[in-house]
Image (cartoon, rainbow, N blue to C red; front, side, top):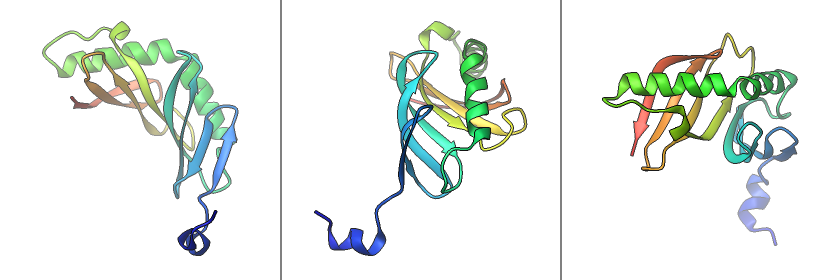
Length: 139
């Protein structure tokens, strides 16, 4: 049953894609959750794309992220360790979200978030396959 508000505002645009799972258009990007192939775990996706949905450029960037995940994870552990007083091992990190840029992965800044069993969360910024050293930490 539709409420009066949804009749006025309209329903959000939704899509289901083989790469990113179920997505909702948020105006300038698509948000949702799906299985991340390198880990076979569910993650949140933030796909920078217009109202027509993820593009071929998004899919190419995502394929590069997936095929280079081991390197990206090691880079994340290194920059997280550099910013903290203790060593963080890649094996301690679980990917929780992936930003998928709209254009060239090597030209755009993008982010991947990780969690750890102790409840710590780390958002790591990348340019291409290199972690920039910018890390947001929350507990």
